[in-house]
Image (cartoon, rainbow over all chains, first blue to last red; front, top):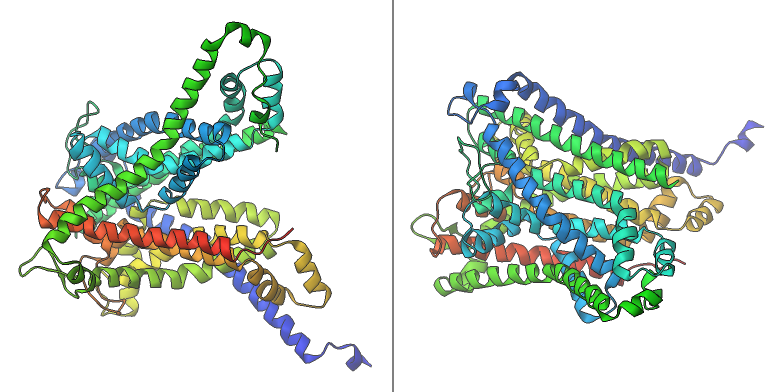
Length: 291
Length: 312
């Protein structure tokens, strides 16, 4: 009796294979989380004992016990502030043009293709561009402003793409309502479209800047110094940055310096985590407001 | 969505009375915004011009043929030799290793995300992938050198302190989120009707995934692989830290190699004056790097366009 109800062996095999496949997919997915946890635990175990107030307020030193990240931290703040000040207006302006004004013209197609391609250019190539264009050609030297300009070029495509998405999500009824009251196109954009897209633009900006904070290769190219025992006081001063300092410490053979690098990484990751959390917070709040 | 600009040209009475000043104002703003957008084109052109001029100067000293097909890369030591193949080989070794790790794991994660995972699981996994994608590459370099390399040396004691395998593993981890998220998008674009049709004729979830959904999303999946490869080619800090600085034409992942990007970093860390051949080499290598990634990115777009299954 029961033999008739039992599924044929091929079906059993197919089902078994299907379950196995599902397990495999599940395991690979958790692999990412596993890697993230291992990475964080490893960096914390190595770096946490070195992480104290002195680490944040000391300049780098030949002696591991006395080394700190003051100049790197301040340098990163300088570069990121200037990067934000330059890249946000440029990125939003470009996005507004492409979303609100551009019609299908050859020049606009060329702009679109450029942005898509620039987003895929390796960061080190931007560093080479910055070296020739800003450090040598504009004679800005290995300064904060040269670093910020290089970073701006690097994150601009990402920021334009994010800002365009935010602008595209603004409903057309808002624009039409504004036009109906007699506003010009720019008045509509300035007073209605940009404010409505602001949460999205902010999120994109934060994510772009958080990329800039961690980028090392372009700063190495333009010659951010690895040993700086002073704090930059203006945009034309030489500087170092947090990832550069970490790279410098990792490159040394002594294990104490590797632990210092781990401590630096903890500071860097904390900053990135805070920025990401801010982005998520803004996104969620704006979604709640819209609903 | 109806774009607002379709309705824009209807001016209000007030605007008409105020005359052309306001129109000039509008046009001026539009012009400024246009210039900001045009900046991207200027940047693209600058990259091409900068790389091309310095590379041309380099080729005045070194024949193109010797550069592209030479098998010895010793530009900083006498006797000098400018064969770029060891750098390209080192890069490709690491890209292949990274692909071996990042591509299958990324695709399987994407299948899980799009076919199996509940909304709650997605809401955990997606942010984890985003965080993984946002970790700076210098951190991955540290992780490779201080965690993965000692692990490898525990298994195979002959492994070098700097080795391609360790760099490949972290670069694989770095491209994983990108592959997973792009493949997830591609898989989710396959309409549910196809899945339901397959289930209706008795297919198992495995068969639906591998014979219906993955083939249906193949263009997006292939494009994501190519983009991930391009990303791996341009990866700099992790390979500089973990793979070392030995131009080495080898297939042995346990040896130290130097990638194109790592060479550029090595030269720029030293104090090489502009105008010397050493200085020009980084632009020749950079131009090659740029061309490879450009070809990969254009290729990915072509795959998407040409092989896209159009669903209604």
